[in-house]
Length: 155
Image 1: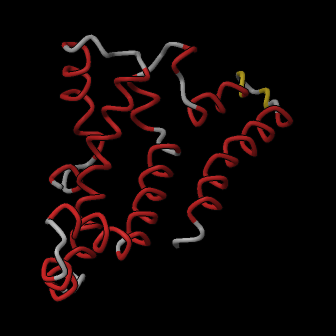
Image 2 (image 1 turned 180 degrees about the vertical axis):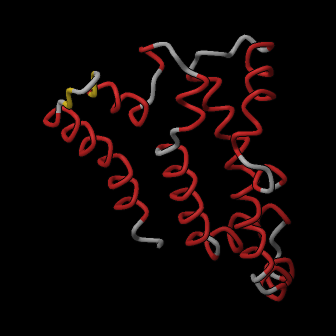
């Protein structure tokens, strides 16, 4: 959670140093791990309040009926918290999908670039290639829309 208290621009050098030392600089794996480092605390914070709102009586009723702790978790608590899990998954996906700042700093290889960092490549000096730029923008919106329609049942 401390990562949300610190501006993202202050974390460039430490994160880049970690990625270089781990041999993950200029790779998609390094970006995925960076995004996980930012989305896991957010998801934990978001889900914590929802899990605390689940009545303890539901868990106790499951234990009285003969469920194990794991059974209570998977048969009672998880179905109740599906809307929160869907919202959290959607938020973390769109946050990672649309992230520009770290992707533009940590990745310079053309094959490892993300879509948001590739769209500005359609601007060369003073020439804007509007057609390909707008087409790639529309195509970049499709995966979040598909994810939204998949999770719409639980939102």
